Image 1 (cartoon, rainbow, N blue to C red):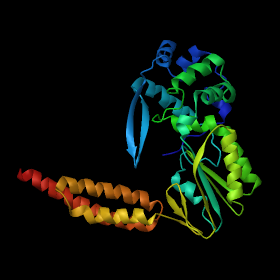
Image 2: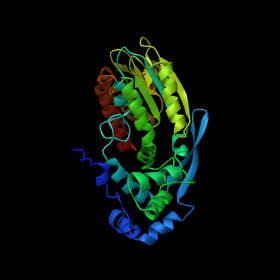
Image 3: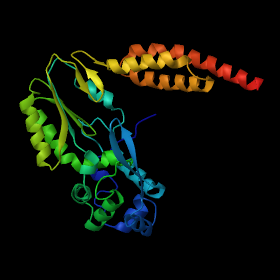
Image 4: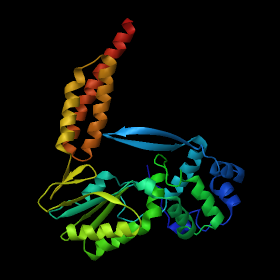
Length: 314
């Protein structure tokens, strides 16, 4: 499938949008009254908690009507040309390409923006629409209400990742400039910020922290690696010559393989499908792992035939 062409920001349909009626009809193919009703509705989201390790995270997912608006905005933001340093929300780029950028026998430093989506408040989103996209104040205000939850970017919307990036782009651009002046490679994957090169050392990391702080955001999970160390970048092991999966993930694949014979027929089929998915993901990092897929496909075919035979006997 061919990737759709991107366009510069000033060709986005939202650029210099000065009419709320045109926004509704030409951008969202709906009526202004619907947008206004959604903007003033406090119950536009399903809110629930999920457990991530030892932490509980609140998720805010737009309900179907608002979700349609968010999907349209995502399509528009997706087509805006992104800087080379951004590795998330861009077709052909991923957490794997993010790690690959930093392969080499050089030091590396990394840091995360703390509570990224909740920290991108309505004021930043409003400035994105008003100043960056050049919308009129009333259009910017309406779009801000449609794309924020309790005064910040929602954590569970399809548009959140790109919306948060563009709202925080001045900070990321400044970090990129800092990297260029220090002759470092810089990449950003959602809220994961990574620098590598000869001068990627604690003193530089402190300078990067100052930039984040100057833009009113907080940071955590900062880490410094020497040139000789293996580095963990967006869940991928990076060394001097290539990327690799973590030993713990390879052990998990072994455990999944070991458990294939457990359970009833339906459970074993589900386990095979799950393992195949895990191997495809791991194989993007290390191709040697893909050789197991053919064997698994044969196992899946055999299990499917066994299931059909059992069904006929019933």
